[in-house]
Length: 125
Image (cartoon, rainbow, N blue to C red):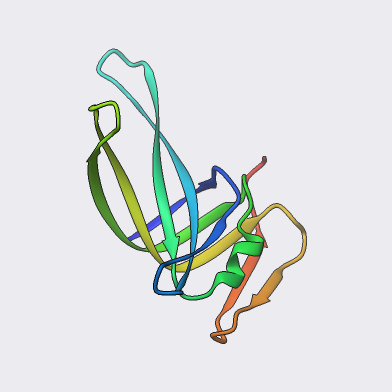
């Protein structure tokens, strides 16, 4: 599955109890449609994302960046400390493509030999 959205915060690298590093970040995806009355309805979906391949990518995943992600989605549900039911979406990321507003293309070489490209964004903002 592919999703495209903007990071809601800077990426964080965490280390698991098994000493593996994971990059965690959140992406917001905006969508709009018209209801039966012709009113435009804006809808935002948030995904909590994880990326296990290399922690080096966290350096370029900053709040507001436009990203295109490939991976798989899972849903989760839990009961909070207050007893309320909660639900969320996790996106297990296998590939990241950055779309930035800069005029140049920035490539970050990961330890795995994979390149991450930051390409020009054709959006007006």
